[in-house]
Amino acid sequence: MEIAVNDIAEPIPQIDIPGERTVLIVEDDKSFLQRLAKALESRGFIVTTAESVADGLMQVERSAPAFAVVDMRLGDGNGLDVISALKRSRPEARGIILTGYGNIATAVTAVKMGAVDYLAKPADADDVVAALLAHDNTRIELPENPMSADRVRWEHIQRIYELCGRNVSETARRLNMHRRTLQRILAKRAPR
Image (cartoon, rainbow, N blue to C red; front, side):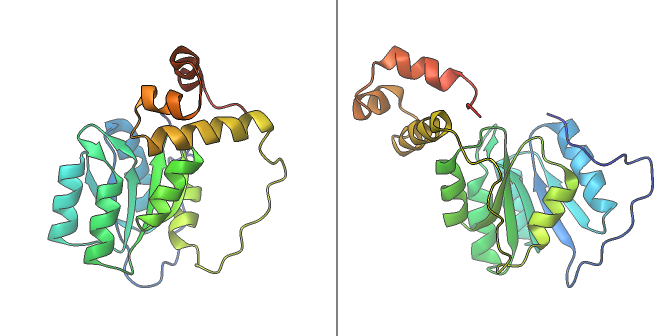
C-alpha cells in the first residue's frame, strides 16, 4: 500500500503542534511504516515505530505518546488493542486507526475503543495529521456523494460478519443467505 507524502524531496513546512509532539506508528508493512514516519517527522512530530501489536503495547507501556497511528490488522493481532492500552495509560492521547479493510462496523468499534478517527489506506500524510490534530467539536461535512444502496447492503453484511467474530457460517445463517453467496460477497471489493 502506498502513502502519498506530497513529494518528500521538497522541504515541508513545520506545522505548529501545540503541546507534546510524540507519535507512535504501529504498522507491519515496513515500507509504508517508513514513508509515514518520515512524512510525520517532516511535519514536526517525534516518531516512534512498532511493527506488531506486542511491540506497540511495549512502546505504550514504556512511554505513552500524545498521538498514535495504528494499523487495524497486524500479523500478531488487532491494532485496537494498542489504542485501548494507550487510552488506559494516557486518556487524553489521540489515536487513529488505518486499515485497508474499511467498513462501518470496524469504524464504530475503533471509536468505541478510543480512536478519534478511522482512515482507509492508502492515507495521505496530510489527512493523518488533520485527523490527529482535529478538535473534538469539528463539524463533519455532509458527503457530496452518499453511499449507494449496494454499498449500504455491503456495509450491513460486513457489520454482521464482524459481530459474528468473522465466522462465515454463522453470518450466513443470521443473514438467511447461502454460505457460498456470502463468501463471494466477502471476497469482492466494496461497491461505491
